[in-house]
Amino acid sequence: MTEAKPSLGDALPLVSIIIANYNYGQFLGEAIQSALDQTYANLEVILVDDGSTDDSLAVASRFPIQVFPRENGGVSVARNFGAAQSRGAFLIFLDSDDKFEPQAVEHLVKALATAPPQVAYAYCQMRSFGSEERLYPSKPFSPRALVTAAFVNASALVRRDAFEAVGGFDPTWLLGHEDMELWVRMLYHGLHGLLVPEPLIWYRRHAASRNVLNDGEKRELKWRLILTYPGLFWRKILKHPLKCLYLLNKLGESRKRHGPSRNDA
Image (cartoon, rainbow, N blue to C red):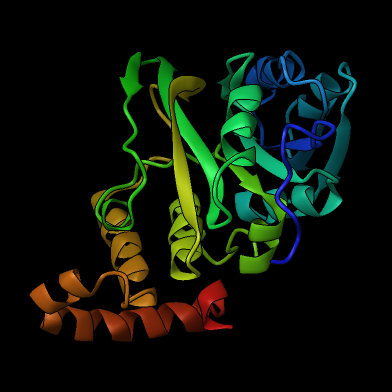
């Protein structure tokens, strides 16, 4: 990554807001409007519709944004496609049932544009709304903290060159935690994050969601992450060596089903 880091002393760098959507037409207008209402002046909004069968495309047509309908391929594929269509020096991903505070992009850009070169993304705190309302307090970034708890949300503002250098979201993470895998992969490549300690994102909680994982799926994703990046999780591996040998075999079976992860290339 050799590109010069943008600074706010120059013309404002373009930010691409990328919304991946699947059948959330009832919430989509609110998400798009929050993207358009940003106080940051230089941005583009891109919607990738991942094969919706509801009124999502009709909702999107009411707004002055770029819309890309695609066959259903999953959230990682949709986000990566949106990033490929975008032109921004910075990328930020918004789920179609969530929304931004108006100053979200402005504050994240200000933090990231003046950060050291190894800082690839800026993230913030978020509040939930809908079936549950509470603040999700995020931790200041540290490599040790990142491999012990998930505290970076999917709507971090990321430098395009860093995102492209590590290969974007891994589409083989089909169950979930694809955002956590991306931040851990960036750490594997020596890239860090930066906390903006403000609640700038609203995360919608649903009373019942198709995206809720059961305990077995959560364990599978947790151990897949550990065994994909053993150098980052060596403490965990030393505590459970026999379990790791068993799960290495399970991970091999998963790779046969889904193909190699980004880190295997």
